[in-house]
Length: 305
Image 1 (cartoon, rainbow, N blue to C red):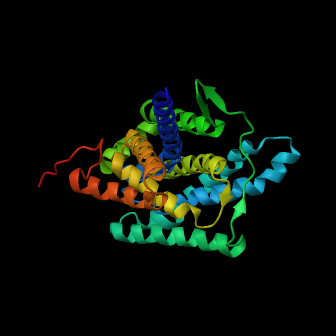
Image 2 (image 1 turned 120 degrees about the horizontal axis):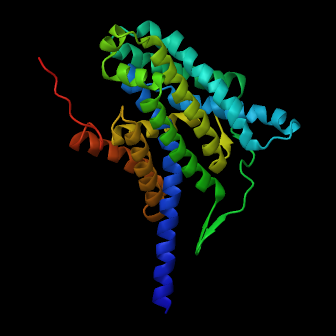
Image 3 (image 1 turned 30 degrees about the vertical axis):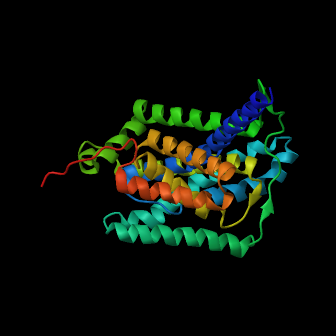
């Protein structure tokens, strides 16, 4: 009897760690979607994308007093965060990346790193280097499924990520602008010849990716309620690893990579060591690049010469 009880506790703990991993992976997935969309269309690795999430977190924090005066809940701060980050992402593309569109990729990559450092240092200069607490986002009771007790913010994070992924896929396949973005990602020159505005497609990609990062900021703060200027750095790098793992440039691949990365990280912290979680994440990146550089859902493309 004691053995059965022991095994049940072990199984419940394992299931809870998988759920925790899915919640963490959902945040990685939302940020990875921005990476994969920008790379798929503009062929640019936007290393400033994680810092967009940081900016969205501060915007949400500073908008809370106004929302409280209007009687709105804390989670409504996602709206000003999405609006601000969408505008910021579009401005960054127009001012920093558009002039380098025909330059070598290394120039755009260095610029992306520079934009990342600029956003971090602006936050340090005008907001401060110290961490700031964020109020509780969801005031809901835990969900009880059998013997499992799931915190509501974990449930909502996973559901929102899946819903946004489905909506993004529908947008890309069913709408005029989505089809234009797909055409641009496949062949920008041919898309331009048939009348597609390449600049608009790329700007829209940055806008959507930045909006998703803003949503990710609120979901992240619902579980880790602390903001600091450098919070987007490691989160952005791990999201990039998730995009590469799933197949960068492929939307379902970014989500799959995020979920896998989150589960691996959660299991590593639970059963091995919290200090080794980053080592396992980057170890996965090395293995993927050695075994299948195109990612789990990526396909090798042959170029004619």
